[in-house]
Length: 346
Image (cartoon, rainbow, N blue to C red; front, side, top):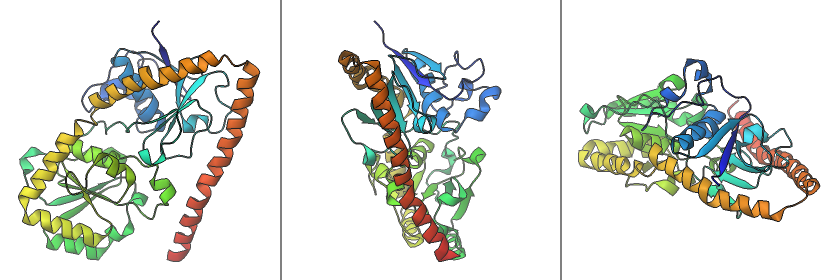
């Protein structure tokens, strides 16, 4: 019998999504019409709806639901479960992004190997950037524009300084800051991608995905990134991206790339080649293998235990209490660090 997989969202999108198909390799505009445009970029779109569409296109028996289904494999996200006692008699596959651990689950999926733990757990990368416009190939080996894509608070303020921008101009390079989500997919005139986070706590850094690196590979750019475990898990510094910490690191790397155009091209091509492992097609296959392999096997073992409903309910209530506590413990040192940083600069 073919196994069915249920993707649980807080609210079913308007009609039309069920029959949509993703437009490979990088655009999913066709999967979400104007009435569903508000979903794009949310946790539920990135992890649940998009994965539902991709696995449906791959031929799996999947459904989109707004509540867990009893005695079935139900895939959901931390933000959907955090304030509830969730799926008491369901086999829950909980997706953890940059959030605290998920306790109300039978299987956990993480986006960074640094937080992978336990038997029934798996690491899978975030989907690549959809609606992405790659670097214009007519730019060839030019190194003239370095771009940051993300929220204003996500980049270290050291890279906003006039000294850094003046030094860039002296090298013949301009800084392009893309704070608006509507421009995050436009790499047309970008040669280098910059991403060094602003004083994030190590606990939070460990949960972050390798998305900025994978997106730069997809776009055909060269990335200058901070030291994060997810980047090192998929890439190799000096081979398919560069690892930096300070503006001076960035300036020295850019000067080297400007001087040796062959270095820029070799790193750029290495990234493009590496992207094949993290493309939409590759991730689609990984999801299929994960769902039909380890997750289905764990589900069968869970069914074979045949535990009484009362015991299942007791387990879930205990897990809910643990998740609430872990959420507070996870956030406390992060907020304390943010408060101290604020007091230092106020």
